[in-house]
Image 1 (cartoon, rainbow, N blue to C red):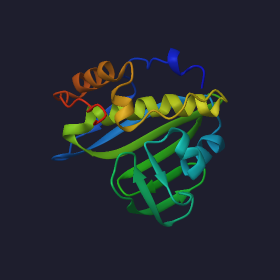
Image 2 (tube, rainbow, N blue to C red):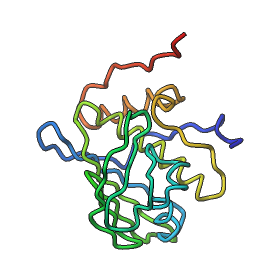
Image 3 (cartoon, rainbow, N blue to C red):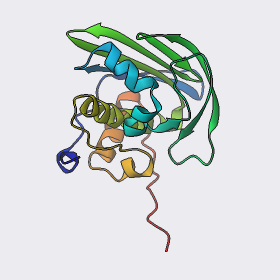
Amino acid sequence: MCDREQYTPGPASGAQVRKEGDKWTLILVRELRHSPEKVWQALIDPAQLREWAPFVTDASLGTVGTVKLTWVGAPAPLETKVTRVEAPHLLEYNDTRWELEAFGGGTRLTLWHKIDRRFVSWGAAGWHISFDVLDRLLAGNPIGRIVGADVMKFTGWQRLTAEYAKQFGVEKPNWQPQGPKG
């Protein structure tokens, strides 16, 4: 994890939204330097998810059925229905859909995630950083998971949320993380 101090997220890119009332769909596309099979394992394996994703699961997401999924900072796990698995190309559960496509010696990863419009720029910035962490993890250069309240304190977070808010034509949320209580 030696590169974490030097990590700065790149500019907001590869994202769009589909607007459906207050529940929007955030669509993020990232090209990764790793095979679809390697990226697939990182999407379904609980041990790998703990290294990069903003949630943990109690079982693999690679089988249709029910798992417990806990978002970082959430008080309790959610019963999550994995509804579609077509390894290593398509994964669907709850309001989330992942598509993997072989592309240029690596993988084009596309995420569709339904999200309240008030938090769409946060979601885009959070996934942007998570995808950077995933790419480094798969390359054997892990920098450690950066999620939840920690991501909001991270260098580049404010810039990314502002850039995504501008791209999506929404107001940037004004919430700041609270310091430790004492």
